[in-house]
Image (cartoon, chains in turn cyan, purple):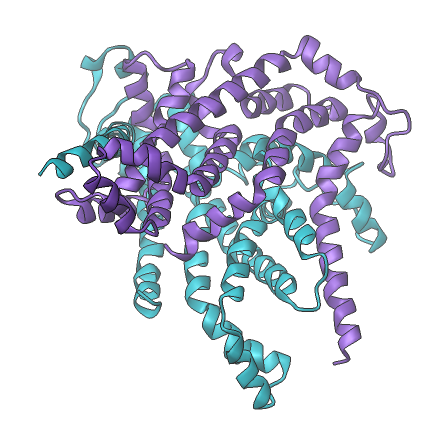
Amino acid sequence: MKGRRVAWWFVGPALAVIGVFFVLPVVAALALSVTDFDIYALADLSNLRFVGWRNYTRLLETPLFWQAFGNTAYFVVAGVPLSLAVSLGAALLLHSRLARWKGFYRTALFAPVVTTLVAVAVIWRYLFNTRYGFLNYALGFAGIDPIDWLGDPHWAMPAIIVFAVWKSFGYNMVILLAGLQSIPEDLYDAARIDGASYFERFVHVTLPMLSPLFTLVTIITVAGYFQLFAEPYVMTQGGPLQSTVSVLYFMYEEGFKWWSLGSASAVAFLLFAFILGITFVPMRMARRAGPA
Amino acid sequence: MNRRLAAWIVNGLLAGLAAVTLFPLLWMVAASLMPAGESGAFPPPLVPRHPTLEHYRELFAHAGMGRYLVNSILLAVAATLLSLAFNVAAGYAFAKLRFAGRDRLFKLLVAALIVPAQVAMVPLFLLLKTLGLVNSYGGVIVPAMASIFGIFLVRQYALSIPDDLIEAARIDGASEFRIYRAIVVPLLKPIIVTLGVFTLLGTWNDFMWPLIVLTDQDLYTLPVALASLAREHVQDNELMMAGSVLTTLPVLLVFMALQRYYIEGLTLGSLKG
């Protein structure tokens, strides 16, 4: 039929771009990861050799890779719950019937999401300054001694987490707020007639109704937080003592600083496999539990 | 609990949260107007005592900021227009046109959303190098010309176009391209604006890929230039704040003007996903 052929004019260009500049590179990354593609191969392809799993086994023996992995896991495990708690809290506040100026507050709380990460990381680098940063100044009122946020290996990652939560909580806030608004009002009315308190309504109506969406949001946030890169690049350059080297930061240096492109591809795949592993199972469960 | 007390608590918490959220942005603007060194005093000053635009002048005169601003605008606008042309057509076709393997193909695309873009970066760099696009505007624009998310977003929206409307035009003898241009695109206008804002802000803010693909300083976008300036000028607080204002104010203004569309797209993209 004519209509069928014409459809390819509509989808063809986009699919071609995605095929050539996304699907093909992903497949090629897998192939690259079993070669020793480096600066010599970059100059002359005849220097390229097949090395099997050697990139992977060598990475698993590299302490800095494990440190990068541990740093990233720390960022995810501490950052995601904190970020989700702030997002949910803010969404509940904005959803409250008692709240005023909702439009203004929503815009204000969402604003950091649309800002340029590099630019706001630069701001926070100064807010975190040990001597004249606002954070230490404010903490001083609570009697807390100045913390060397970005210079102390124990505090650098927490500082990056604080920054990341500030930057990103508005995104999930808006999604959760839409979820709250879609809960039918009569469920609350019924609970009210049964004499349920605010807290009981929250536990027995809001939470169960919100939970499929909340699971989905959690999975997406976990996957996103694993892709930590620009924050350490701008704020700490991976330091101090490599305490903020993330997996992607490690990949970037491996690939585009040392030009070990085979090894960098292996890093990317290990990260992908890991993200897939920890998000796929809960994703299936959420799909099954939620409405189709 | 007393209702008035509850109202105080809710609004108090919101005001506090908004203050904490906005503070860094307001301080950025204030510090960018302070003479060199003033923001490094203790306790940290909140408002400039002698506001000055010297850092902005300095950035444009000596740091090449004008050039980076032009690069950022050009790249963001070009990527947005091209990706709209590609994604809107594809999204519409996936929703309303019939072709072999359509639904299977769409499912595959959605499944591919789980692959982080960074997995493709190393081979993409080599591919663009072969094509001679590394270190050119093309290297940033070409991979951004179509996105699975964009196709997905448009498709979800286009599903709501009534089939009768398209069918009636077909019976009247209109070609598929004419139907697309005269009927579909006007109906898709809200989602086109939404996707446009998303792409514009996304391209403007993007950091890792331009950092990799642009090596010539003259081609740097604002975020890449700012990151490199920040490594050189660690001590020049006020200068860096002026650079941050120039980088982030344009996107904030675009967002504030079009936030209805932006937030709609965000919830449409995730709630119906």
